[in-house]
Image (cartoon, rainbow over all chains, first blue to last red; front, side, top):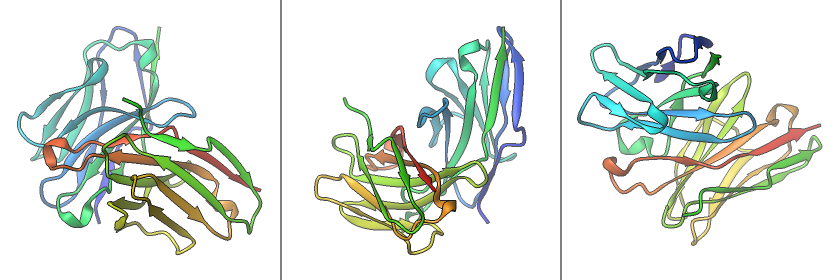
Length: 116
Length: 115
């Protein structure tokens, strides 16, 4: 079965320190990969995506992610965390193929807590 | 440009009733997908519409249905509501013009509470 795993329910980091939110996936073919952030009682905000090309993807608000095909991972990173980065983060995969149009498979989410 | 608009933001319904939620995509986007978000099951794909046709469907019972109009606006309907249908319903729109343009913009969601 196709799936996305975010192994950490919560990540705690001090402001100014680097942060990593982990994501691994299990889908066939060449998936398209996304990261979204959700603030309380809000929808999902797009951070970045990997479709093809350079394995290091830069996105919004200073976030970046590294695609690793051999490890089927797509970890989200930021060099210096801000308190305002505290939110719920979702990794998502759109499997390859026309039968998967419009369908994102989401991980369970990771709560990022950045402390001053 | 305007984002994805979902109405209403909040709804309270009684078990057994039906409900209709609306989603207006970004201008020019022809693909609209719907998702259900609950604390227990997370984000789950309901269905996707493109040019008024359902192209893809998730594993939800037939009580969940949708449609898309010629202006790409979409509605989803849930009939015979159950307590377990309480959730945040999100829609996402996409231009869907090839992989390099893939991107899904989400609305703020409709919070449905079934009592």
